[in-house]
Amino acid sequence: MRYLRELRPDPTRLIQEKMAVAEELYTLWGESFLRDPEIPELLEHYRQAVEHSNRTMEQAGTFRECYLCTVEEGQGCCKIGLENECTVLILLLNRLLGVELPREREVPGRCFFVGPLGCKILARPMLCRDYFCRRHYARIPEKTMARVTAVLNQELVLLYRITSLIRARLEFWTGDFLQELDLTGYT
Ligand code: SF4
Ligand code: SF4
Image (cartoon, rainbow, N blue to C red; front, side, top):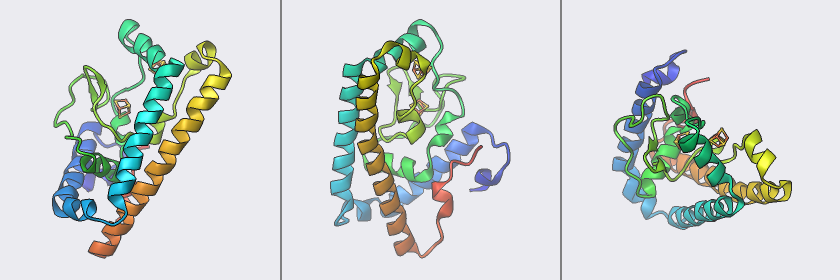
């Protein structure tokens, strides 16, 4: 993972490098993960937690504000480089959830994972899920935002548990020190 060590890595090459590592790990260990005594159940809980968060944000109106900001006003905050909030473990988690990772950046100047219908990955890093700007706090009641945050926390705790377990399994199976799987690779 050469680019993980560069001070100012090209964001596209960096995410492609991380995706190549995740893809290789998926090819080698995907079946073992899916036969594991704990991981399949956690994957299902995580998927349900993401759906619960999405329903809660839809009802609260946070998605609508992001849609207006991004599509109607041409702003939005899924900028180029943010894809590298995804660690190798998060990319591997997406593969275990059945997500096909894109090969190219579809929208110039935007995150590698932006598509016509929004974000293309299911397991997203904390920054993507738990970031709300002033617009949300100005337009959505505080109590509603508190509820959104509480529901998101359940998803994010599961994200931490599952990526920690994936990492622990890989360390046990390979005997390697896999710290780089947890790095974003940029600052
Ligand atoms: S979080 Fe704020 S800046 Fe980002 S897309 Fe949503 S409304 Fe726009
Ligand atoms: S939500 Fe998806 S598209 Fe937006 S920055 Fe995060 S990973 Fe990229």
